[in-house]
Amino acid sequence: MARRGPSARSSAANRLQADGTAATALTRISTACEQVTQSALEIATGNQDLAARTQKQAASVDETAEGAERIAVLVRSSANNAKHANDLAKEACSVAEQGESVVTQAVGAMSAINQSSIRIRDIIEVIVEIAFQTNLLSLNAAVEAARAGEHGRGFAAVAAEVRNLARRSATFAQEIKALIQGSVDKVKAGTELVNASGQSLHGLLESVRDVTDVVQQIAAAADEQASSVDGINTHLTEINAITQKNTALVEEVAAAAQTLTGRAQEMSDEVERFHLA
Image (cartoon, rainbow, N blue to C red; front, side):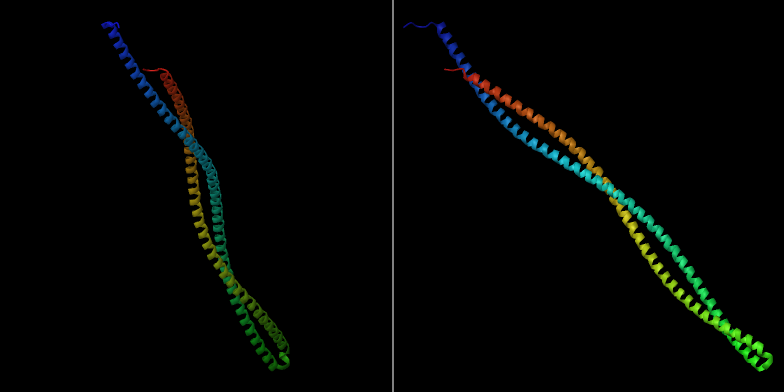
């Protein structure tokens, strides 16, 4: 058997060393490809899950934005209704103030009528007294005419007529006095009712003013709520746009991870084509 020379042995040793180095490098490359493939698969899976969740989140944000828009419409409608109610309350307050002024004037007029009725009653009482005195004077005149005999007959007739007129005046005066007294009583009762109405209307006016203040506060709060809801709706729209962009980015990252997984698998397949001793 022929022996190899030193150069042949050195060349064979170099080939073995080269084969060992290549095998180690290819083994490391194969291991790295497997690790890259595994990591890419994990990234792709995570990104797919993240993409699904982001899509769900985008749908939820979209639904929330639609709900906020509906709420904004309702709040704006409530604000408009509150403003309208505020205007009506102001009008009611103005009408109540006018009614209070009218009732005050009516109370003054009823009081004046009551004073006039009392004055008329006093005058009628004087008239009744005058009729009574006239009746007495006519009676005395008739007595004196009777004493005068034939000469006082004409005077007696006149005295009788005066007495008759005094009686009729007294009767009519009594009737008028009764009517005036009834009017005085009715005016007094009416005055009391008008006063009670005035007090009730004053209380109603105070209540209307309180209601007006409350409605003004409600209108202001509704307006502020409408502005706040508009701001929330604007922010939700911005969040929705950002979420949509994030969804697109996550889908792109997931696609890139899938591509990386494919490339790593192709590299691994290429490395496996080498058969090492």
